[in-house]
Structure formats: structure tokens, C-alpha cells
Image 1 (cartoon, helix red, strand yellow):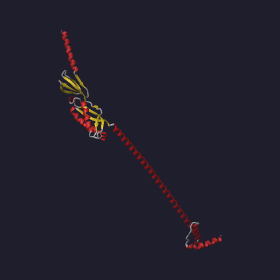
Image 2 (tube, helix red, strand yellow):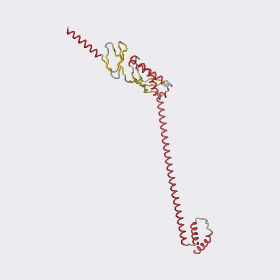
Image 3 (cartoon, one colour):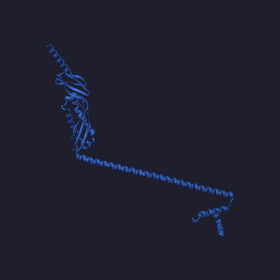
Image 4 (cartoon, helix red, strand yellow):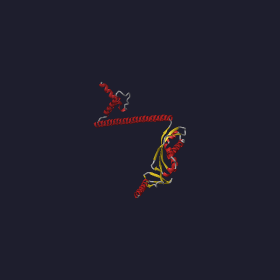
Length: 297
């Protein structure tokens, strides 16, 4: 009988230890546990060691506090100009209040998906096709603001929303491709024309510089020729002056000077001039020289 009591005592002790150990909970980092007591919300366990009262306390939900990403399937939307296209979005959110997340809405992910689709349709319905294709940042910001405000009572914070793909109908895609091709061809033609224009400008500038250099060269040549002619004239004048000086020093009389002058006039004519004006003071001397010349013949 005593042994039976000891066995029962050990069994009770073992059961108590098992109950204690089995109801110890460790909440890891970036997690939170929502605890109910007797069916009602009791508290939220944060990171650390916790003890759950057996048969009384219950962990209702284990919530991750990390940022999550939901990639929703494409949603059909209609633009302001009645073009139907498909848009798929990506939502980045984070649970900030585990209690509200647990008791605020039945299925939070389905609620976010439906709310995103509804908001997207409302926003795209106010935009035309071209605006929808070029206003992704506007669409993202507006969806995020609407979702963040709507999910706040659910303990959810929407960090950002991204429009991943916008898929217009096939005929619109073909028209857009033709338009983009035409735009590329137009830009190519503009680039070619600008290149040819720059080439012609460079050629013209080269020709201009060549003409300037040629004109400068001609100018320098003319200057040098003029300087040469001037120097020759100076040398001739100097030689003439030297000759007159020598004649004067030699004591030549007036008749010799007149004879030299006559020879100079003869050289000047040289068969080229048709009329030569001879000074009166040497005309008589010229007749005498002609007579002497006839006698010599």
C-alpha cells in the first residue's frame, strides 16, 4: 500500500512537472502571441519567456511582425476613355497591432486584395490610357494612402504599393509599338540631319579658314613684292645719286650732262613710246646729236 502511494505521488509530481514544462512558451524575435483566457482576449506576449496556465489560457494566434509582401494577380480595370486593361500590384505591409489584426477582420489578406482591386479600379477610372501608362508613381501613392487608412483599424500598416505590370489590349499594344517605331525613326532622322548639318558646318569652317589663310598668304606675298620693289627703287635712286655725285666730282660740263640726258630719253623710248616730250633746253643739243649721228653713218 505504501508503495502504491509512492507511485501515485511520483506520478502526480511528474504530471505537474510536465504541465509546467509543456506550458512554458518562448516568443522569438519579430513575433507576437495573442493569448486568450477563458475565451476572451487576455494579452499579447512579446519577445521572451512566458507561462500559459493549463486549460485556462490559449494562444489564439502567432503573429509575425516582419514586413510582408503580397503579389496580387492581374485585375481587369477600365480607363476613363473606355479601354480595358489588366494591372497587377504588389503590396508591402506590416502588422503593427497583433490584437487588431486578430480580431479586426476575418481574413486580412483577402480583405487587402479586394480593397486593392476596388481602389485600383476607382483610380484608373479617373485616368485616360496615356495617363495610366505614365502615372505609375501617382497610382502607387494614391493606392497606398487609401489602403493605409482603410487597414489601420485592422492593425496593419501599408508601407508601399507598386504597380508591377500594366497590360493593354493587343490592338493597343500593336498601335503603341507602331507609334514607338515611328518615334524612333523620327529621332534617327533628326540625329542624321543634325550630323550632316554639323559636317557641312565643319566643312564650311574649314574652307573659310583655308580662304583666310590663302588671303593672308597673298597679302604677305604682295607686301614682300612691294617691299622688294621699294628696295629696288631705293637702290636705283641711290645709284643715280651716286652717279651724279661722281659726275659732279669729275667736273663734267653742261654739254656732257645734256648728252647723258638725251641717252636716257633714248633708252626710255626704246621703240615703245609714241611720243616723248623733250625739255627745251636740250632740244638744240638733240639736233646737233642727230647730225653727228648721220655723219657717222
